[in-house]
Image (cartoon, rainbow, N blue to C red; front, side, top):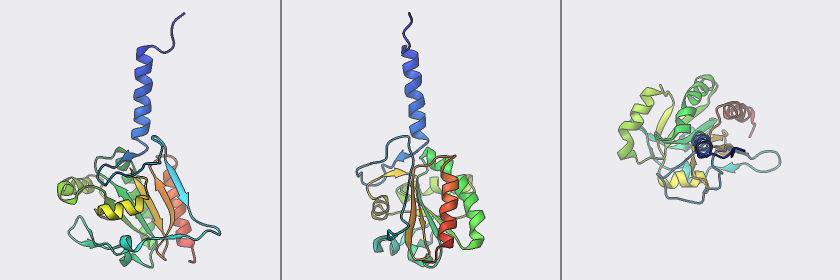
Length: 203
């Protein structure tokens, strides 16, 4: 009787599981490490709604002066009164690269309705300046791109340093929904619905 778990099958299984983990989320080493509660190979969404109050963006995130890829300054408080999608990402992150074309499509779809989108790399802005510019060109990114400071990234991540992470923020500056990781089949419709919900929200 032949053994089922041959060395080849063990290697193949490990390789497949590694690929699954790679395409769900990346562990960001560009910010100070914190406890990661996101299981490898999975994505998660969290929503604050119903009777529970929405979580407002902290002041240190809202008022931070962030460096934009075009040399401008990005400050989230400047987008008060608009629905905002903030995406934390990095050029080396496989799931981030998978997600970016969908974010470009969402931006084209929702921009005319007043939705703003900002992609904030967790990389060092000086070391990654050219790679981020090349990323923007390669993916035809037409929304705002810049860098999150370590303080802003850690505050938003709340102990889960996996990327990508996306935050759908209401006109009142409150987080309606947070996404950790990316699933090509599950995440896009949920992101779209979250933006619709934020647009429909009366505050």
